[in-house]
Image (tube, rainbow, N blue to C red):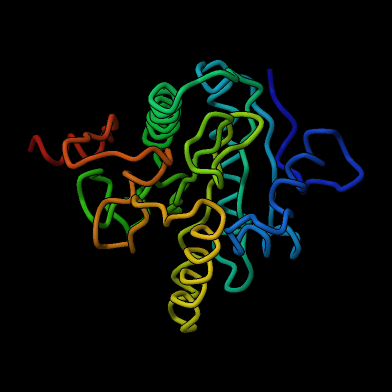
Length: 236
């Protein structure tokens, strides 16, 4: 079964679209980048079946790579793809994280199988401080959302994965705007939660894989992800 391609959420559209817009648009939502993407028409939503199933992973991967090809070279504005799953709803943080990485693994395996090369600006080793997911030759930073997230900014009515193109962050750094954006997000997150998310770190200081699920992890945490291309290089 194929799902409709990603689309911009409509304020007069389905209940799911209106809920997504309401979630991002509320005054205390900390991510000003997501707000900008929504207001500038750079936010897209893709509906999927189950976070816990590989049932339509091929279609999801195709949608992600199409999104990357269309938006990956843009120099201005924010572009984000929200993959909104029907369920499961009652996942705790550990189980959500498990399924999150199962989807990343499945999509990455398809990326390798289809012959896409990893974005040369990032690493394919999840232990590397330069690591990032890469689909269709474009790097992505992922944000996990679900109903039982401990961080209020990550607490959404359905399990979801937000994929943000890395290129937009590089563009912000080149324009000298990245640090001010980051500071604004952290300040708003502190106001909402009462504390700054301890997992947030600048790219290049620690592997961003630790940030994706939103769950607080310690130094013993190991990423449940292996890129086949990386293994072939490492084994040789």
